[in-house]
Image 1 (cartoon, one colour):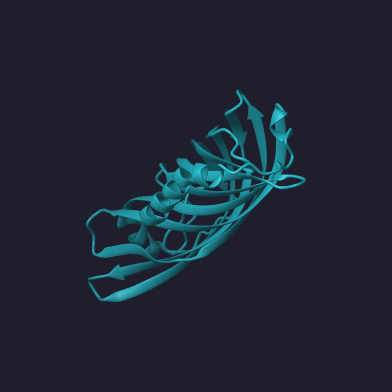
Image 2 (spheres, rainbow, N blue to C red):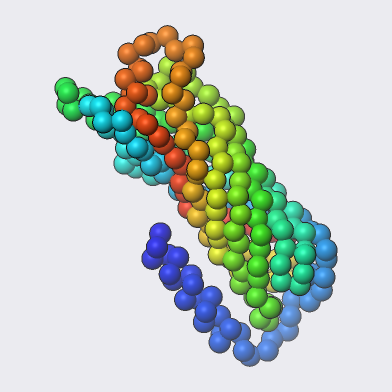
Length: 227
């Protein structure tokens, strides 16, 4: 993740050099709109970081599965280079969780599936337009709600999560619209573990919940906006 982030910063630094030669500008007046909207498609890799209570069970997420997301975007321009963006997204996430029980050398696995409705609010700061390109950086916070819920599994995640994100992207001006690839890093701040487990029928599953003191979501996403 750090390597990809460094490469993008280098590319954005060198972009003005590549764009010095003047070309015909596509959609030259598209940024004069005070408000505009579009839609988004993307893929993400979602991981979970666990903190443990010191019991005999250790939880980890050894494999990271790709997830698919789709959503909308609304952009309100504050100045020529600064805007506020709202990007409601629907994400379908699957995480493989492994529980290592050191008391009997048993390994239990769980496929933790979630369907998140996410509402991020971001501040976007862009450079001046360089021919048909305009790099930008974006940061903000988001809340997300898990529409799915499982009960009789080793662990259960809470419905609500919130976190922060930072992203690098580039507005690419095409003849009829803007195409904006964006690489986003997300860090969840809430403890996702449901420690109380109301309605649990199999009490033996509580040992997995009791072994975890905290769990947080984190992900990296590649999102394509069409505006």
